[in-house]
Structure formats: structure tokens, C-alpha cells
Amino acid sequence: MRIVINLDVMMAKRKISSNELAEKIGITPANLSVLKTGKAKAVRFSTLEKICEVLNCQPGDILEYDPTRPGTEEQEE
Image: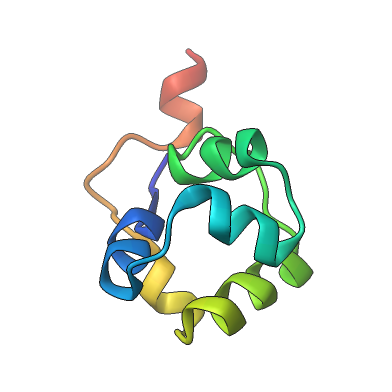
């Protein structure tokens, strides 16, 4: 996937653990892990909004587009 999730970077900058962030945004630690590892197929805007609120950041601080990475189409073949 060409979308890179930089959630770990922002969490480290804000010194917040996965369990603490999951609790504050109202999702399970397992679902947060899926998001952090880039295995999520989608993210709700409401979840993204909560993450940005808790981490005091912008969506672009968490999500990045990398055109050099294989896209979804290439991975499915």
C-alpha cells in the first residue's frame, strides 16, 4: 500500500503508549495495532479526528503517501 502510517512516530514524540492511546480514542489495543502496522484497509474520519485530538497533530503527521511503494493492485496479483 502506498499510504504509510507514521503513528508510532507521533506516539513516541508525545510519549504515549499504545494502550493509553487506544483507551483515549475509544478503540481496542488490537485495532490500534492493526492501524499502526498498516494492515488496516480503512480508517474512519472520526477515529482519525480523535487520534489527532489526543496527539495534538494533523492528519498529515500520521498519514503519508509514498509513490515508490507497491500499490494495492500490485500486491493482489
